[in-house]
Length: 212
Image (tube, rainbow, N blue to C red):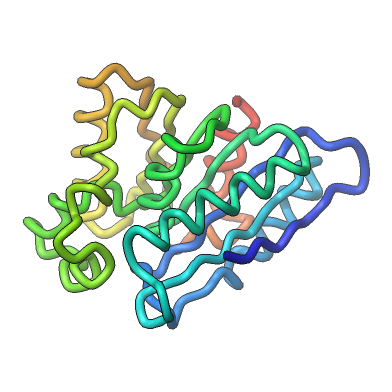
């Protein structure tokens, strides 16, 4: 577990954790979210860029990948109140999973892999899902863990991969049925636009954090 901490110049508005995606694979790291963390720091937040063990690294995969994120969130609470947990793509699964373990004001999943069993049914990253969770998919699946009890925003870009948008709808239906407060936001953009701080997708993330 590694966390890069970006601090604001003035008084803190709270802590925001960012969790990168990449289908939990070792070849993808947290570097792409650096600009997002700097943007949050400029807005007065302490931003934590969370790194975790991934498939292809020693100890990577479920449950260690998830518990690494939980450990990082606990570490970030040293810097103040945890306002938001934000995850992109596979990081969305990690954010939703960890939000049940570590309390925050809001959890935000951006183009998230929010429903693992449904992803397998759709053939959407099913090989990656299986390599991550193996025979413990039900335990790793955010759908099986509702209600989370935390306000949830699911950001589903209009040009995201359609299977991914289906996973968002699947998770939202299950979470709402369990009593969670879930909002779906659909900004113009694609799966990767969150890493561009000038995009509508990133603006939707900032709006969700600020509202919390």
